[in-house]
Image (cartoon, rainbow, N blue to C red; front, side, top):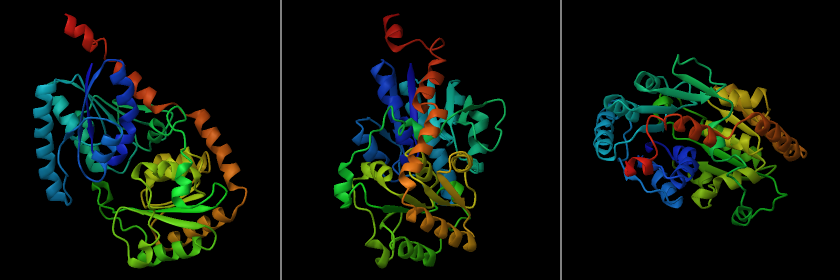
Length: 356
């Protein structure tokens, strides 16, 4: 089969990198097209995945609209030459538009319920939309649910083994308590109207948690000088190893909250919209603690984080919760492969086509 994967965010590289590795090893041809928003290209290079650059994208509503037209035309041009059978991506509209124009299959993964604009621009054109079973909304007859999370496409034990060398880089021991605090830029299309934590509460969080553990900040944007000294300084591909060994994740990233959960690290997640998967990781496994961006909730979130970091039995307890999570979830990469291969009878393997 010939498969076009379109990457729109660094997380998407992780979602599809094991799929790429397994499917190319089995003889399928894959073209990866990637936006250059943050570190997508560096990640693709790290994992040895060739790609075509489709530009940096835009911020602002009007700029994003014009970029949509550009990206559609870019993918259409590439598709005419590559002739993909299946388009595969995480929720954004360009691949589904082009697949519909060409009469091809478009498989779209999503776990972000409040990305309403992307739903409107993508779902009508997709063949299937595949989401975790805990997805809060019903997307209609195209909607397929699976028992798992996107993060298990790369952090499932089938693929991930923590590298303890990150501890020496951070100058901590495995028995030491340390916290990763994550701040986001709120620049995504589904983030309009969000403000996140106040600067005062960011400082309060660092000060309070520093009383009980070493603190490292991961931030998409610039930090004030007094917080910049806490910025985590590790190779960009070692963040999941750091998350595994950390005692707590605190911050504004849903993806990192879920990454922490599937690694057995508790998290405190602050966001007005929340996610179906972080809700489930809270009520079913008690690995995520969800709070809104309201001022009083930010204060409650910090109190919860302080309680977690002072619990000396936390690491063992949360590892057991992770075991329960893994026993109830599938390998998301294997699910992706199975879904794509359902179309192999329509589009025979590459070698067979070349021989005919």
